Length: 351
Image 1 (cartoon, rainbow, N blue to C red):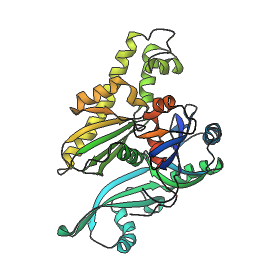
Image 2: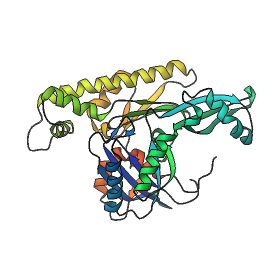
Image 3: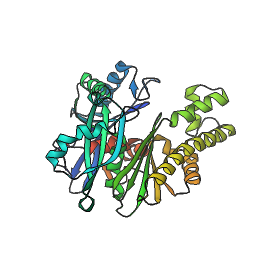
Image 4: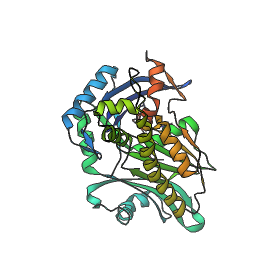
């Protein structure tokens, strides 16, 4: 773990804001603060904030209601404003790489280099080939600045911006460890976006965001059954208990799940076809709100022909501070990004 104190993880999703604060001790990790605040529909579309006032209001409320005193936060970004590439460059010193990275990025990033924030991580050095492998990340400055400004308006101090897919990888490493001899796929199914991160031999080898998520299930129930959004959402998660869920709902869920599973399968097939040294995918781990839909896990397993396991990011995290452990566990799959962000520290240095 890096030095310093843990930042508060703030996941601004398209349907809700999730906030987590962790404490590290000799006993391990503990969740000491937890906040969850729904956002009005259409507040965030395709990663773009359409209603900044609603986000600032929700951020202010969730910190107040959760009793979070710290203002130092880590934010997550994803979607079309983020580009992630695995590239190879000639072996060079850290100082040389810092000088060269802008030029290298220009060869691989389809945005004007002046419009993006660049960062990188050295994955592997290969002296025998005179090469080194990098994970190159570029995020549009406007997008980062927009999210950071929303945090500042809510009287928060954004000290770190991370990529959602990597945040999930961080909490996965705490929970399961990163297998050094296997390839696994981490999928986070959010409301409007699903992120895929394939980790091979302990490092991220392929990432992709899929513009599809839990909302598509709700919208299709609305369309086919002619019910309100609230009613469709209730049907999606199994009903309210006061009335039976129409049998047609199960067919709709299965249809939409098969469509999303098909998109995921095509991404997995692309990775396997373009990464000869990656090896077969041993297991798929599913997180996010959509992970609770049994039809989705079974559809992905059937399509990909790979075992699928629901990933509970709270599995190795204790609960303190008067929080209800049952509520924290029930929210677990939705907290993957926020928990991963909450692992970040205020005094981190590049490895």
